Image 1 (cartoon, rainbow, N blue to C red):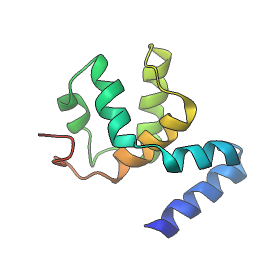
Image 2: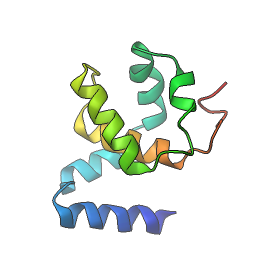
Image 3: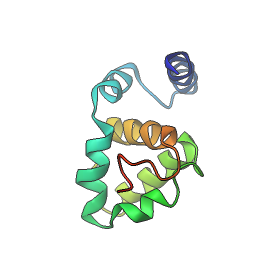
Length: 98
């Protein structure tokens, strides 16, 4: 899994979608806490849980970016961290879908 994360980061860096400082920030963020604290301001976790296992990292990135445009208070490093985190969770993950 760590190799995948590094490969993903390298690809994003090469594409210019992720800068080194943003990458460093994304690796230290508690993305699960961001989801629980910020995403649930507007909706409950059921909405997120329905899509677990169905969206990849890019899908979650696009969703989180759209939510920021709609007013979610999530910074760019947190968007990266949340997208990566949610893409790894299986459908019905108990850490989020209680």
